[in-house]
Image (cartoon, rainbow, N blue to C red; front, side):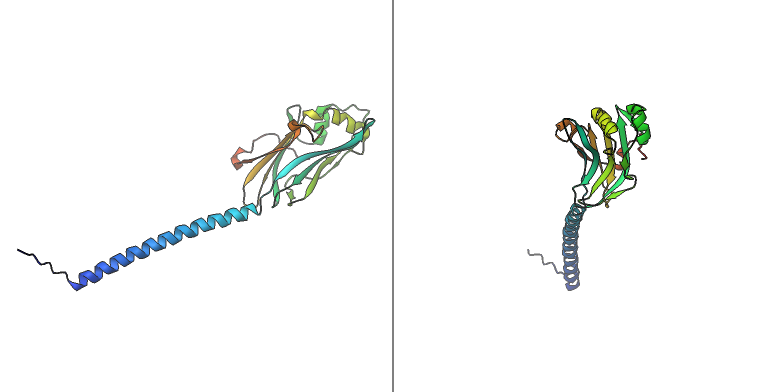
Length: 203
């Protein structure tokens, strides 16, 4: 015995509409996913075009009779501005608040006059390919030589961010030369919460 099932035309139409709706939803979800991935790629490309990369460098020239120049500079080798957040400068492991406190820690003799040229670093923005002079001791040969002889005990940490609020820290220990692997600056990407609550340098 054959059983005939009669399907109403309205039911077929409703089923067709339902299938079409599911197909449209699937296409919409697929397009949204593709657009989201494209936006992520575009954002990464945009960030790459505004990525700062700071290095801490020492500039010292001279000969066997002594130094002629002794400077510490920052260079932004990245593609975007570096927005300085915090600076930590230490001598022999102890953080100092300013250069005068640094001179106290390094124990410069009273017969050596304090002389230097500095640039304000706090809240500074260092543009891409810009070189920024942190300090120059070249105007006082005795002071320059005294500090250089002890420069292996100087360390600097600079915390900075990009325009997209991505954070990095660049560190360097030792400032006698730029040739030693120990003295090269290292850069690390960090979370903002990782910026330490230490004694910050205030010029």
